[in-house]
Image (cartoon, rainbow, N blue to C red):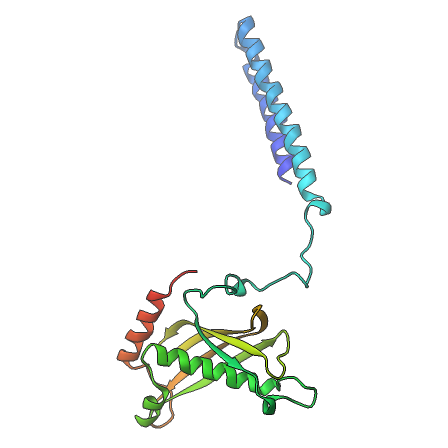
Length: 222
């Protein structure tokens, strides 16, 4: 442990030095000064021992319960509009509910898709124009973590952030918050792949890369 190493350094090391230097003649004042310095070192060592034992005590290191834990990626998302995220407000419709009176799980994927398309539209990338050109954007990976349900009439906001691009892929993360208190409903991450007119992966067009890069540069930080 750190304490044992410090103790060995202060006590063993200093006392060892004292033996080696015992042949050196010291005046009375020098001896008093040396003793005071050594005593001060021992005192600091004891204080450190007390602090370390206190820090290691479970009482002073409480575990965070599951109820109070929030994913790191969700921090700074609530309240005012945060840079890096595009937001769109929606409302639950009755036909989106399942037999239990809550929004069907599959519907959340539609909410997220709409949020992604609106985000691209906001930076000048139209999914309709991409489709007319014969190319396409396809989701190759998409994971959702459901946290709380939405019910009929609930208003909510979809927040979308573009994390980055590599070659022919766009990485993003999304969150849905219930309004007005912005209760976290779900969090999601995914990857979109750019496809050519033969539906094969290809590089993202340069003009799209420029727009994505500009969007990220303008929305760095929180």
